[in-house]
Image (cartoon, rainbow, N blue to C red; front, side):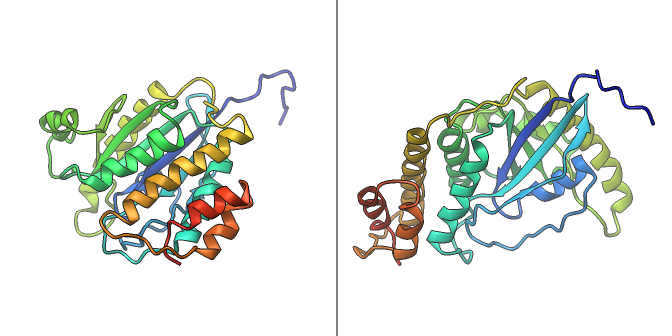
Length: 266
């Protein structure tokens, strides 16, 4: 095979995909990329664990997707606050290379406070509204055509805090007695979402953490959002969360780290 050394490099595009556990993120990404990563419907709490997919060539670009577990409904078994913050800091470090697009995945149903808080955390908090955002609604296999769900619920989104460049309804279900139907609907979903992705993605990665001071400020901003979520009505212990303090002081002055860590229960 002859390699053309004069050929221009293939553009690289990075996409951050977020949503709560069980919303259909991994199923969607398996549908888009052809991979077969295990999915989970278990409420694991907010871990912010991020899984990077193998780059996928599409529309003359290499696309790398990052699957991130965000906030979930109350009642799940939360990871420790220190570990959640550590995972989120790792995500922020990944974000220093920027993203071309953010995708929020949600299961069809009511627009909950959790959905809005996830949007606030990732779109407003992590990217500071600088990266294009699209939404994908999963679980629409019983609506014909699937996109009708978006049309019928457009007024609910207009009344919410969620703002998207586009909103696509789809089905990513796999297996069972209806696999024949699911398979056809996944193909429709794959084509529709890839079309939305290629149309909405920024030409170059949007870098929103260009300086160390911005990185530290972003950590403070996001931790304040998390504090409001974790302690909605319950006052936190005045004690310092030592593991969280140890993690934060790697990224900011000890005084600032102590002040933030003292907000959280050990």
